[in-house]
Length: 264
Image 1: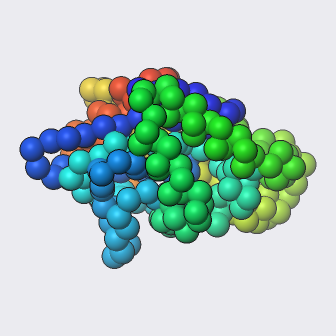
Image 2: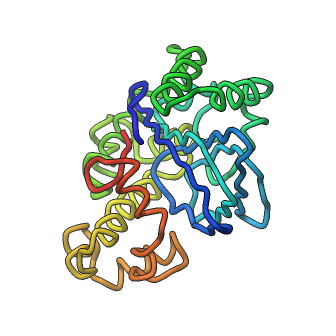
């Protein structure tokens, strides 16, 4: 199930109780992702040679994250980098390329939220609970530069097909200043963010059965080899293998919006 929460925040509910462990890879996505597990269920996240058990916050990552699920019930939250400062009191840049245990991010609140989610009877109740938690934490005065916000929105609106020089000209900043402020507040460079957004759109189209050559042409890639290199850089797999990733199949159901992707 899926539910929209605050502007720039989206939530989905996941439940798995299979006969054995399920191994999946979380494909990079242009949002900060938070997974809040509850009950007696558990999952392990593996990235960059480290492991985390249970709830995590995942920043904008340059590569896929391995997830091993024994059984799980969790609420997954996706946050636009533009609202991360208001929700977490820090820019998304501080989470860039990292995985953080939910207990480290929310302290004692994490366990209280898990307990309340466990006792909630329905997914709508759980979504409402998370909405309340995020709303209580929301600090309206924690905002990023309007110029940086404009640049991010343009990158998303163009599906990554925008020149950094054009973004700088539109903001009135120099290319160097936009680059510096964007990295400090969002995390990746504007070019890196554009590559991630373009990849996200492309890999969802591949998962939807579109031919790589057509995806490359429509997505602004120089050619199919360019698409292949980008997909392999983000997933360490070929476009064909990436299109079959179980996580992307879940995306189509859990986050039903344009192209399977859901972000602001």
